[in-house]
Length: 147
Image 1 (cartoon, rainbow, N blue to C red):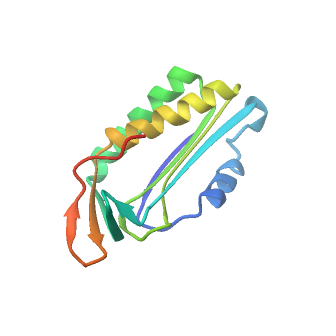
Image 2: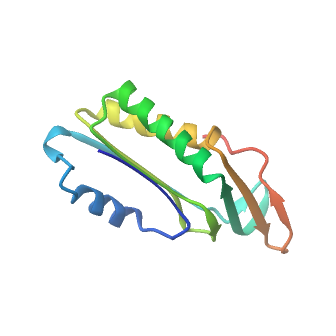
């Protein structure tokens, strides 16, 4: 089972995982491992205090890319289930931006797949970030921080 959600609504990653696991299509008996990554917005970047961020995207392009990333991880690592949620729109520090949760038969596959998905999201996914700094000025983020 694969679920990919791009949303402007703030979400609780732990509630999202619980809801995902309660769906009839979810089969916990197949999976001996689950890896989870939750990314949240920081209040600093490039030596500056950040008070807010706007995350923009083109919906069709983003959905296509995310599906390709997840499909590749499923094939590469033999995943049983994948839940991917990503925020867009306006965010403030400490809010969750991304949730990557994967289930597989073994821990190595879960860890590797979760990292593979997250690294692609960080470096390849079509999202554009505009930060609002503490002094109120805005700037576009030109590069992502190293993993």
